[in-house]
Length: 415
Image 1: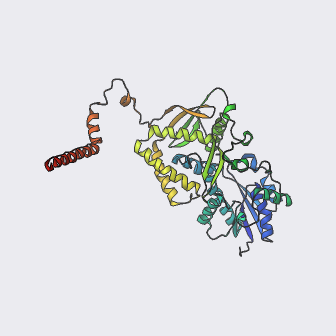
Image 2 (image 1 turned 135 degrees about the vertical axis):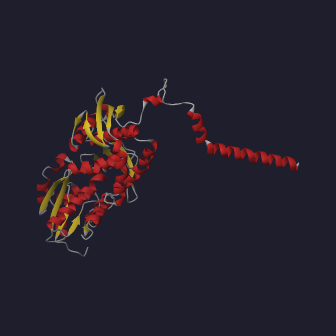
Image 3 (image 1 turned 60 degrees about the vertical axis):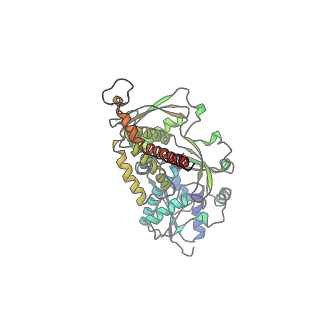
């Protein structure tokens, strides 16, 4: 790039990629100041000492922003309410976090007077798109530096060697070369032996859940309560979003819930294999879906099911800050007005089985569906309904009979 920045705001995680970017930026642009922006969206101990690490790597400042509440309330729960799942399995844990992190990075950049933005996303991945679409929405005037698209580092092995030469401490090794992304919703695992989709994930890979085989031999029940489609309580205890999700992660994880092995389609066109752990998320999606089935009519459910994959696509593709997403949210919000109630799940060795559901807005009414005697439904009415419901098929069959008869009559006359 011909532009020479004076101060760069870098999206910083403290992992391998962003750790080596700090000294690389200093080498690439002599005299530049690097301001790291680390977002806490539930990584836990991974952010321990991240500020000191950034400074030791050559950063001039490092801001650690606590975004957990906003992440769960304004990103996870709306996506849950929409029923958005990508590739039939992926609950979008990494995808949802990027627009929030990138927006906060821009806000810090503006506050400190940065004249450029940088990220550590590779040129093969989806995150580069997610970050840069957010930059385009909030800072279209700021140049973007993406080192993975410029430098001569071509592999994680190269990155580890670069870190060693510049005395940058990293936890990745050539033996355990996994690329991980963790937040309060999930943890993803990619790279290493996982790049062979025929090879099963090793037991020591998982961090949020134990294997179904080693899960307790007795089942555990958990009741999740919703208010207008938003989770509000676990086992009768009202909780704020972050503690609620943390509790469900613990409950699901110890019962072997939430392991997902997916070969997915990246934005850039290639397929990749990832292992995801989303224990609390799997429980929430299962419970929310069951409550919707109880409280929404058939056509509204069908309309939601049409929107859900579109919503998932826009989240996966980083198009969060769009009118499209706002429009879907407006529709979903109306559908969720009656999605209030509780669902009980029975958990056993990786399975979440519905054990009960209830809602004051339930459309289920035993009086109409009972096999016993009732006085609210006239079974004789079904005959007229069926006659009208099948009218188009009846008309077509009658017309075909008439044509066949006419053709037969014509053949006889010709004979």
